[in-house]
Length: 317
View 1: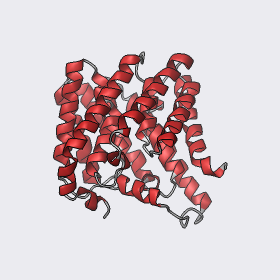
View 2: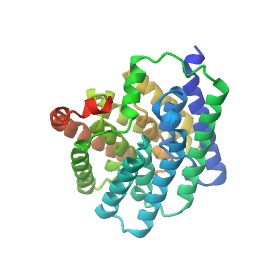
View 3: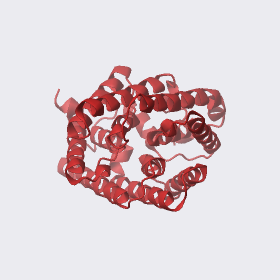
View 4: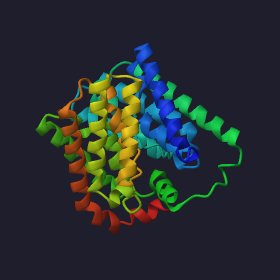
């Protein structure tokens, strides 16, 4: 039973220690919200695509953080900075053929929250570098034990979801959705309608329309994300920012995913957003709800076009 949850326990320990370090040092971004998703998937699935790309965890995510910080410093807040961030960060992933979609969240977070300190990128480098080192050490210590471990159908789906997309037909739908989400955030005056993990969720949904488990259950997507936002906000309001609320948020978010039978690591990133978002409350949860509902509705509308373009088959290659 313990081995069954070993990966989840390791993720909780790693993120909990990161939270304690962030609290002790006063460098809040040492607890990078998307680290919840990265630690969970890589420790739980040591032979998965993300876990095997340990160098990319550090390089792609740190580069994304540098790009986002530079844009936040040099461009005024607004659509231009948002669009520039998305185009540059997606372009870098494509050029590097990196599977590390969380790098998009790392790039957009400083733009979304107007973070202009280079300490943000340094923090990302520290925590992702540490995670990458631990993954390499774990592989060396385990030898061939995990290399030849059986892989079930769920792992096959998750690996296909995390691979670099090989076609480009999805890019147009992805861009239209992001524009729509940005416009919605402006109309509602809720900037976090376009919250950083939403870009990761949309990227993986549109690029892997036929294999993405969230794509097959788009109505479950808002439920999972709203639940993640709720447990994160409530944990911070009750326990304050720090390791206790971090562990409570992650544990509750894992329970949510297990209850819904949905492997969706970005839910963990959503649950940790209140750790860096000032005064999370009902408007934070409302913003997450609106963003994910807009994504689900738009995806249902364009899914036939994505399927006709053969995007899912390309993802399986």
